[in-house]
Amino acid sequence: MIALLLIRAVVMATAGAVVTLAQLNLPGGGFWEKQVFLQWASVLALAVFVIYDAIRSVNLAIQAARIREYDNDMRACLSAAISAVIDATGAPWDELSIRYYGLRGVLFWRRLELIAAVCAGANLVDSQRSFSPGVGVAGQAFVQQVNIAIEWSDFVRSATEAGPDAWAGRGERERYGLTWGQLRRSPQPDGLIASPTFALNGNPSGCIVVSGPLKVVDLAGDSVRRTLDELATVLDQLGSPPRGWWGSHGR
Image (cartoon, rainbow, N blue to C red; front, side, top):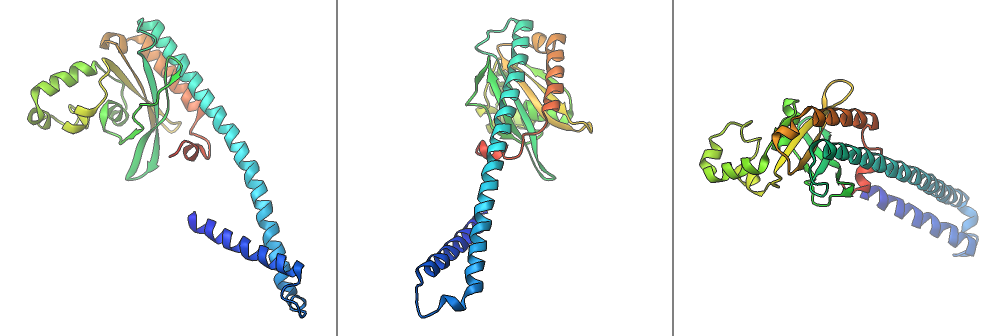
């Protein structure tokens, strides 16, 4: 990308210099009368780049509108879901959060990337941005393709008291794919539930995470499950982020 920008800058500068010198008749002595092809080539190059820039500006404006619409739709459906969870569980509205991670990458490089996160309608700026499938509760829910509900703060406290050797002796699923260091530095909400989402072909495409001062009996209840299933359907309808979304969000 940088190389193309450098080439474009060199061509534009050269073509602009040719056109300017020809208009000023520098150097004189009939020099430019012998360089008709060079003059027309330079004019054509400038015209092509001007048209390209104009088309690109229009495309960027269209992309920006689509990106804003996608972000607004995403936030609206997450806000509706978190409201439903609050109604079903009675959880404090300002302590409950919901995040949606979408699968990005191919083959051996795949990540679950944060697409949207809200807390009672407010954007969360401290959310984990990405992680590998199989890592963490959400990563394991994605790999196992099942909902996982857990009282996470109690789990972390118990594991911490047992120590790193006991942690290393646990199986991969029992550790939720986390190393000792990852466990110790992980956020510790009272409870959380991770629910995978699926694409039209049936393959897992992302994961919804709800966290807050909740017990497993609340997280695993029918009301929360239905809310997450309905949200997954809406997210499937919204689809993947539009073109230019990742770059506009600094990723």
